[in-house]
Image 1 (cartoon, helix red, strand yellow):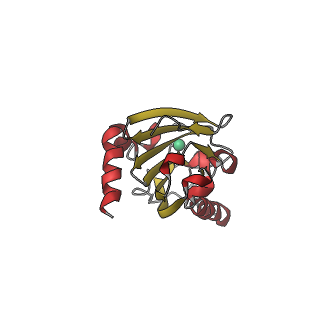
Image 2: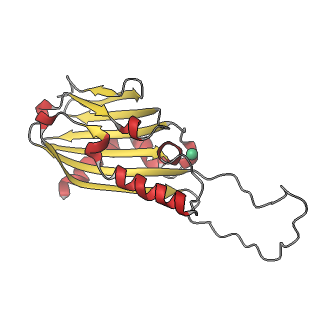
Length: 196
Ligand SMILES: [Zn+2]
């Protein structure tokens, strides 16, 4: 498992802004997610950040069964990287680990005290409708590929699965350094020839 930390370390040091991002969810742009891909020998480490708006279509704290089910389903889907990011079969990749979670910026100040506010005058004067918080889905994957040299391209079915997602800012890290790409839903394919 050391290699996981090694790859994660590489990815983080190459993109210092990512570290801040998790604590500043309000800085994210709806429709735009981030994907880091680090290649190291026969391992591929991937890290995905996507606004809740992109994945489930909302970012409020889910309370209804429907919304909670949507989040559960999204976490399931996000736990299957090979369903989101189609890799060439010849690369022979398998998933070693996959984790997905939902991060909320207001998870730690959720409790409003509502005692003593019985007098609701007319409608629309709830003074506890705070600014909507943002949420973000975060997933980390580690893959192992028997033939990484066959990794010629990645096709993003991510955009078919999540219709609200418009773009992924992709950073690819390999022996040759870091390369940035913008993958949009119109051309949901990343050409990796020349990366290795
Ligand atoms: Zn947001």
